[in-house]
Amino acid sequence: MFSINQKVINELVKLLTKFIERKTGILSIKNRSNAELIHYYYEILRYWNKINFILKRNLKFTNESHVSNNYSNAKYLIAIYRIVWEKENAIAVGNELKFGSDELALIKKLDVFSWKQALKGKNEIERLSLEIAIPTFSIKKLAPIMDLETIRANFKQMDGKEGNKILFFRLNDLPYEKNQQNSLNIVFKDLEELGINAKQDSNFSEVFYTDLKNKKKIILNRLYKEGKLVIQDKASFAVTHLLEPQANELICDMCAAPGIKTSIIAQLSQNKATILANDFSKQRLKGTKQLLKKLNVLNTNLMNSDGIKLPVRFTNFFDKILLDAPCTGSGTFSTNPELKWRQNEGFLHQNLVLQEKLLKSAINLLKPSGILVYSTCSLYPEEGELQVLKVLNHFKPMELPNWFSPSYKINHQHIPGTGRLFPATHRTKGFFIAKFKKK
Image (cartoon, rainbow, N blue to C red; front, top):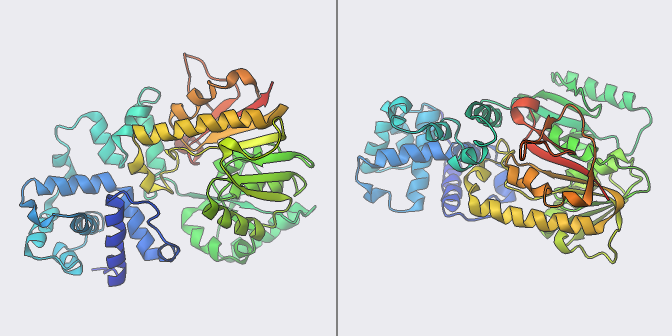
């Protein structure tokens, strides 16, 4: 049997207990540096509804007195993952978790657990929810605009185990070098020496991709440590690229942290645009400051404020605005599995209100004929198409690249100037993107 370090088990139980209690800010910097702990925490969250389903099903046929609190539940969740997913011996896992006789009796039944038997009588959406470990809320939201097979394909592509095997990263050429080909040759030489087969993306010369299994090798590479390589999803690069930042432009990144898109604005303008990078979170801006320094970003001013009431003196102020708005993150479950289980009407409404206010603020701050790029890493139409419809009369739609997928049809029509990137189609995160010019 493969055993887990006892300290990792103890900390994992604490983290899962806090998650069950819906506490925020669970992962400390110390925890994030523990690879084994992070692996088990995210894997259990990835399959949270499946593991919970197994636990509740087993509890139907037993005395529940020994599952009296969230701490006990957390231990059972670990046991179920170890036995059902990792095929470990139930008794050995029970000993590892210091289970008593009642608890051991419960997990011994997991040796004969059958999904085929467990799913009998479930409707199509419930079965799909358990099959791909996605909340029924998300499936019901997408069912009017996607068939169930397309929903399945997109979410399976976001599954860290079965789908997204590609890792995107970009070449950061700041300080700017005229001979980019020389930089590319250095990158490929370094990667080849590490046994990494990387390919250049067909749409962006600065973007590359490789197998996800090579992520650790890239992180340990000197070019990554020097800020010459940046791990980043292609969709994130595509959003910022649409801004087409130029020298001497005044550009606002309204929700900038953690700073990746800000760094792309600087790179594409060769550090010659003036950038205001704003974010509501002071703590996240500290990380942004460190990242921008590492990536040699200049001409950027950081501001800690509410983007809804950005403290600048004038309206009609910026040449261009990037509003990568806070959202439900329903297109990023591969990297944020904990967000799956926050998906509900309350969480969606909270983000919709914020997005609408940020869009109104962007309209006031943008110069006439200025460019707004609005994006959300969400698959829900409420955070994309239905949101921009509210402000469309202020803007003229701009053309998007033809490799984007069309956005969802609203009233049987696509909204000009909008598009989408889908995990199953583009092998990226799921994004809604709009590009408009202010009238």
